[in-house]
Image 1 (cartoon, rainbow over the protein chains, first blue to last red):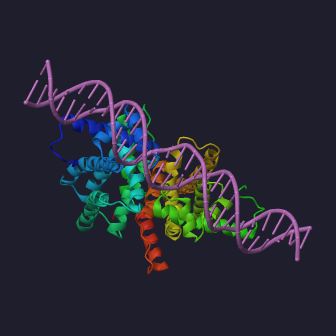
Image 2 (tube, rainbow over the protein chains, first blue to last red; image 1 turned 120 degrees about the vertical axis):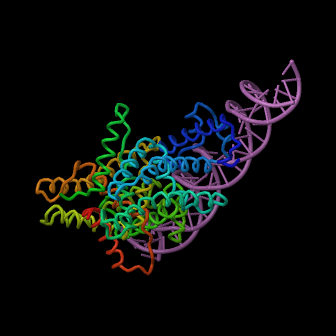
Image 3 (cartoon, protein in one colour; image 1 turned 30 degrees about the vertical axis):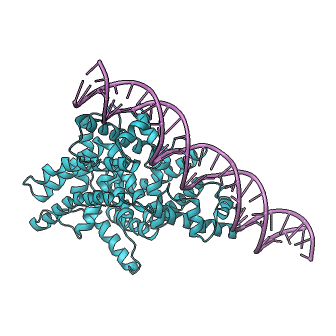
Length: 210
Length: 210
DNA sequence: CAAAAAACATTCCCATCAGTATGTTTATAA
DNA sequence: TTATAAACATACTGATGGGAATGTTTTTTG
């Protein structure tokens, strides 16, 4: 039953993936708590039975959505991190890539943005507590990539901030806010998203001074 | 029963205020959905009866928390808006003030940050829909203050952004993220908060370039 | 000081889901 | 081809919590 169990058949993995996708859509649509397992099943044109055949609980589904959301982020940004660029240029590229991911995987990103807090303050999480902590650690790891580049920028002189931790928070906050205000429009081309990502990243990194 | 009914006695207003405060704490502590009316009553050392004597529903309580949260923001920032300052300086002061409010009224700000989305996607809101729309409009009005200053900065040449709307979003996103990562520490003095507000505002407005 | 109303507390009801138990069908293996 | 298990659907259960109904106490008012 382990999620990363390599003994899952291709079909099983595909089924899980479908459910995770539907769950992300429902979490975005109704919010974490109001989204019911029946909603997800209905989104798939199925019933509860199918969902609970592949997942033990609603929590487990959310964690899968979380994991996937983080994976999208890492996949987009890690290649940039490993490129040999001056800190300032690298940070700009990272911010652009992150913005793109926010828009391209909106249901996932919105789900976890809204969901994590709820889970954190729940009275008892039992065994799931550890899983959640791992996922939070993974998010810290991700944000650490940005702090590292900021730190590098201080050293190579291409950046200047009073406090790396706070600057990192500010940057992530500005970038992640995208999932709150960005609205998907069907006629919107990929180029439009690139445009938004570009403008947002430039605004954050280059600043608003003349 | 109108909220802004001027015929409320001082005692009634005081009672409502106590409940609103307790509700904000519970919303922050448990999240919008998991916070029960019993929680709020318990926070007050009372029972449901008291809460439902002053409020018709849990939704109405949340809306009151929302309204109060916005009021805190306006009260802190409006005086600065009316001051005759160059756009750049004014924006910095607004950002500082906003950060302070986020920390000083954390339960309220955190409640609405987490709560609004849930309410937006609820299937049916009935008559409450209009109330919520008014509150959202009020938030837009508040963010409009920042966009106006940005626009002014473009005109007086003290600011430079590729897109006012996106810059406004970025700034609000960075500022509001404070409620996610700021942790209250009892020994933390007012000066410490001022320090954080100052650093955050400077980072956002002055940027991260040398 | 009575009577009425406000301010609660207590008790109850019922709709909503998460999760389970138990079918039924479809694919896989032998 | 048959047995076996995976992949579902259907039907049920139990707990939880919003809100109403009803009691009890405390103010306020006449």
